[in-house]
Length: 143
Image (cartoon, one colour):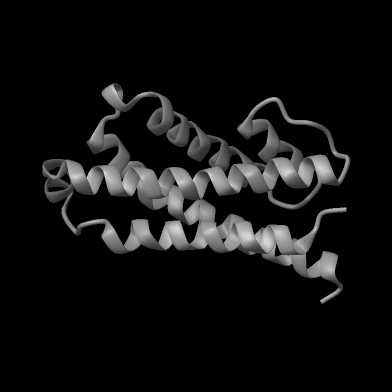
């Protein structure tokens, strides 16, 4: 059975880094594209937030005995098959995980314009994930 305290700690870290991205994201794309330090800060915080979501999904899938995912996208699919999140949300999160992979493995090819466009939808998907996992943790703790 999934331990709610572990989930809550990971959710707190996810929320913190998502908030950092929202807080630091400049209002204009040109400002973002002109400042490599801001790009780095946002990319790193986004990567950490997504990694926490990935860790949570993998943790739940394994702890609940639902299977061992072979990828981050598959971890979200397993959660969807078990009604933790919707199938559409799992697809969105799979896309968010691919952004994380580009950040983690492809600095030279990371397109700041593309990242600028992907951040808002990614953050929204992560926010909905936090809500779904918080509900799951509440159920697990009997709240």
